[in-house]
Structures are given as C-alpha cells and as structure tokens.
Length: 131
Length: 131
Length: 131
Length: 131
Image 1: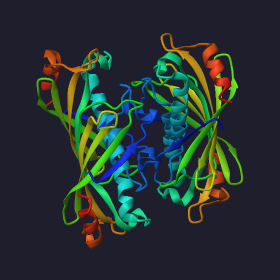
Image 2 (image 1 turned 135 degrees about the horizontal axis):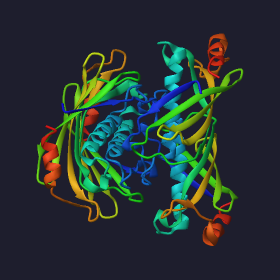
Image 3 (image 1 turned 180 degrees about the vertical axis):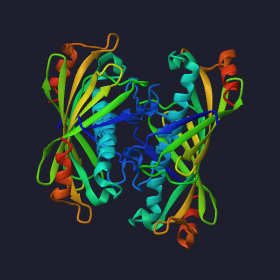
Image 4 (image 1 turned 90 degrees about the vertical axis):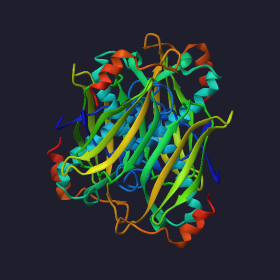
C-alpha cells in the first residue's frame, strides 16, 4: 500500500465488549485518509480540494484490543470522473494480522455549491501516483 | 421495514463540515439494531444471544443536519447458519427522503469461547418474523 | 430546573466497563444545552448568538446503564458580562436518582472575530427567564 | 509534570465549529491517564487495580485545530484514602501554549463488588512517585 497511518487506540474507542467499536474503525479509516490527503493539499485548506463520503464498506476480521499497535494502510484503486475509490487494510503490527479490510468511495465536491465536480488534472495526476 | 428507530441527532454527531459524520451514521445503525434486538432478548443480557459485526456497508445519499428528525428502519434480509444480514434505510421524517442505505452482517458468537455458533432455533424463528 | 432533555442512551456511549463513558456524559450536557438554546435562537443559526465552552465540571454519582431512561435538567445560575453559567442534573427517570451533577461556563463569541462579546440585551433578558 | 502523552488529533474529534469538541478533550485526558496507569499495572488487567471517575473539571483556554501537535501532561496532586486527584495540562507543542487545564478525581473500586476500596500500599507508593 502507498500510505500507512499508525493509530493510537484510545480507551474511549472501546465498547462494552472491551474491543474497539466497529464504527470507530470507520473513524480510523477517516483518520488515515485525512492524513494521506494532506500530501495533496500541501497546506491548503480542505475546502480547496475536498470530498464527501459516498460509500463505506468494511469487513471485520479480528477484534482490536486496547494496547494493540495498529496501522491503517491505504491506496487508490479507482478513479472516476467525479469520484475515487480507496482500499484499506487495518493491520496489527505485532504479527501483521489483517484486522479489517475496507473500501470507501469519495465524491469531489465544490463546497460553494455543494455539488459534485470533476477530479480535475491536479487531483487526477496525484491520485495516479497513489495506486 | 419491520422496525423503526427514531434517532436523536446530537451536536457531538456533527463534524467540521457541520453535518453528521459518516462514521456516526454507522453508530445510528447500531443504535437501531440494539433496540431492535431487545425484542428477541426480552430482558436477557446481550451475552445470552449476542453477535459480533462481520461487515458493514453504507451508501450515503444526503447529509444529515442538526435538527433533522431522522429514523432508522431495518429488516432481516438473509439468514445463514451462523450469521444474518440486515438491511437499513435512514429516512428524514419531514419529506421521507432516504439519507442513507446500509447492510450489515452479524455473526452469532459464544461469548465464553468467542467462537461463531449456529443461530439456533429460537433466533432463527424470531428472525423469520423480522423479514 | 427550567429545561429538561431526555437522552437516548446508545450502545456506542458505553465503554469497556459497560456503562456510559464519563466523557459521553459531557456530550449529554451539550445535547441538552443545544436543544435548550434553540428556545433563544428561534430558527436563527447558532452563529447568530453563539458561545464557546470555557469550563466544564461534572460530579459523577452513579453509573448510567444501557436501557436507563435518563433526563438532563438545566437552568442558568449566573450571568456575567460576556459569559453565563449553567447548572445541570442528570436524572434517572425510574427512581429520580441523580446520576451526575454539573456546571458549565459559556462565553459569548463573535464568530467573525472569534473574540468574546457582551451577552447583549436579548440574550440577557432571555437567560433571566431561565433561572 | 511526571507523565506526558502525545495526542493524535483525528478529524472525527472536530465538531461543527471545526475545532476539537470540548467533550473529546475529556477523552484526551482519559487517554493520557490510561497510558500513564499502565506504568502501575505492568501488564495486569485494569480490573486488578481499577478506578471509576468521580469528578472532572476542565478549563478551556484555546481551541485545538486539526494538525495541531498536542500533548497531555499529568501528575498526581492528592492522595485520599480511596481516591486520588490528577492535574493535567493540554499543551500545543509548537509554542508551548496551554490549551486546557484540568483536574480529575478517581475512586479505586473493587470490580467484584463495585464498591470503593482503599488505595492500598502498592498504589499509594506508586502514586507518591507521580507527584
């Protein structure tokens, strides 16, 4: 994968089953994606080149426990006209176990009009380096 | 749909784009599912008949704003040997707009051994009434 | 108390001790405060008459469990020049047990300049009815 | 301060004002406290030497933004018979600005009976090194 984000598991991420709640893992993906996107933004605000989430799918393989050292890896697997698709692996560092796999679809949005807009040449060129 | 759960949108559910964060919508599904499951549990603890999440997929159609009256509807769409699948619609009450659609797969688990177990006759019979 | 907000306890609010996480109770206060403040806003956006949090203090008396019917009650206990103080009680409906008590201090802010501003006559008059 | 925990600010921590939500900062304190407590536990489960939260107070000085490098510092400021008090500073690394100050009171609990219990000699001795 082209990008890798360590996750600092917090006590508040656990639910009553004493593992990381499955919805929080969706936030882990978001955290990785946000950090990764800074590579494109290079200091510009998110509104300059921003997207909305169109779809999330996650397959949960193993529980994440407090104290686990966890990494979210991602890469771009599809470019559309106004959207792009990312694939993720959530990996436990200790033994490289895959804890979850995921895909998300993002739609580029003009934050003035809140309407979809084409990726544009800069985003497209950058995403091609992220496959 | 066979079950419908009103959601009380909280300020804390919003993210920096001033709409409900997409991961929080996964928690809305969970809230509906948990309330629905009480119909089976009839006062027994969750560990008596519990499951783990195996898969979540959500298609986000429209943003949810603070002040929106939102309902999560669900029904059972598939019964496996150890798992079952639920389908959801997140609906805005004002105009019945579908804000999100989702599916989740749950695996019944023996919380002593943490291993999958068959649905069993009681769960299977109940789920068949929830389709 | 002058305002009372029922709270819909979500599974995601629980932590690994299987009770509502203490930080989530701070979000319950926020939810009550946000709903209460709509009585002043009367449809105007939050930015029209908004505040930032300056201080929170909570005394936790009893755990909140999933399935508890919980209400947050609040009233205004102090008006300053640019700030006001609210007092809260988190109450279990079944037996009126006080689960938590809290106080928060809010500072009115001009969201153009992000600087404190006086309450102003309208906010002051309204808060006096909320004591 | 005797202990210092870097915080990885997540997009999901922001609220509609595009800064870290004030309740999430209470979770930051918890994360620091949990990591710090592992120094006592030395691999034992939390239930072996665990506590419940009795009180939280936070003074918010400055907003935390996405991208801020933030550290939570803590130390023990009071030992009671069954409880102890921690003081915290949330500090921005770039300029050492204090973003929040806080205190929390924890009560040692016997997780069999869910009743308070004395600190005991081991916890007391360790806490004295954490002042």
